[in-house]
Length: 191
Image (cartoon, rainbow, N blue to C red; front, side, top):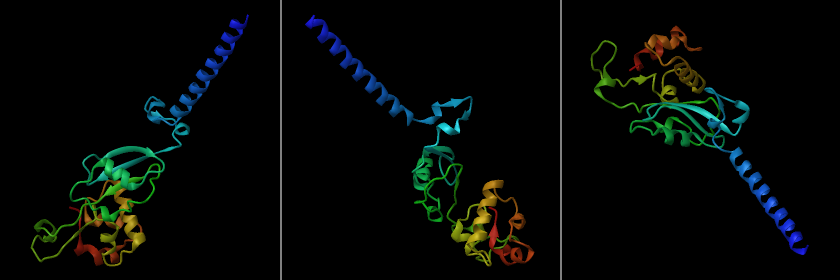
């Protein structure tokens, strides 16, 4: 009888250990990659609350959509996409915490090359143009009459619309009319 009682106690202890380790394993797996928790190609948003999805574009080797823990920074996204040598990382706040749905566009550093010195007439006058498709916040603010808010609107416009095809298209940005355009027209390019 004593032998049977010790088996029952041992069985209860083993069962308790198995149950508690199973609960621990389930808790760990709860925080795993939510991409496995999909229905078709659509993520269940209630199951990915601890993650953010961001779009990295511009001067990187691997542009695209990336998923991170919600406590990651822009620096993590840039490193994941592998910045190119001419990536202007100073135009970004690398310490900023990532936000779900955020687009991170990495501009190119404007270089003083023959391509950037040719004005709209095609002659060389030593002018350096700011590429409105790749310029960072600071570069855009260096244009006459363009402050921080307007520079941000230019960046948002090009990200939402795939860039500018002509310099005149910048007038579609709220706050840039004919007068402001004529003040910056000779200093900007789209290539």
